[in-house]
Length: 385
Image 1 (cartoon, helix red, strand yellow):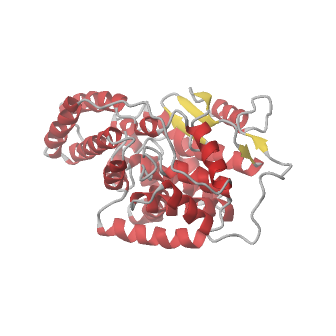
Image 2 (cartoon, rainbow, N blue to C red):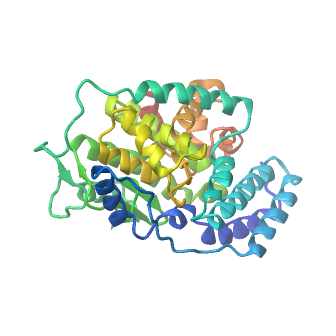
């Protein structure tokens, strides 16, 4: 694999685009915490309403979109590696459409094109994911009561060594990650990783097991690959390939599974999210999604939280629905690591950045050149060795 002279220019162009096109930031309401609490109270009173999200609008310049179109067209004809870069340029172009549609019901159209694959294999994975979601989201015999459990830990309590922010900081330090751990009140998930930073949700009550699982997912699944990408042989490891961020979630779930964390409660959460995201991308309103989840006997607090997450970016009728990627990506990455595409070499590539499973074989040679013992150890974790 000998990249041509186009490579450094493509890296710079995609990095400039990535600095402007930040989907999760764009779809996160600035009033997320207060509005979610108000919505829950409205449901408790028996007078549910649609959310009134407030967004910081960051329009994407038309010139940037045109540049991405031109870049993708050029890279398509360069080489197999060029086609991988072109795929990411096209994905960024689609993400720019999502950002431009934030706060409108039209967001679900580009979101569906971004997060739902169109190949026959993708369609089969989605149908399998639908089946698993229905199975996993079945109500348990006993739903834990977060209001009465004495073992709960507040996610953002920096004075408590058991808290998520404390545990995440310790693990980031142990792994020598040059990343700050920051509490973020508006975060939809328990944690998230960005450039040089790991966000931790504020005011979330968690069990010790969920703290341990979240730290494992975020550090091993996201932060370490992102850190390794900074010294990767190609810029695409840091920029991410098309569906690289999606498949990184699938790989992170496999890491959870190998450590025994993909248990009943975790699968139920993933199943409920999938069903909520599926309904959102099909045009369901916020109220529809909450009622769907309540129909699966989810607690009201969980139903409102999940609905708020899958409907990010919308006005309350439609939304991002990104949670639809989790179970299909788990299936896809699990299949890739089974040996069909070269198991360990695939994982080596994915451990080095935001690399999708389908292009990992082509990039595996670059990873092999930079391979370290940490990759091997983490691959053993995933394979359950």
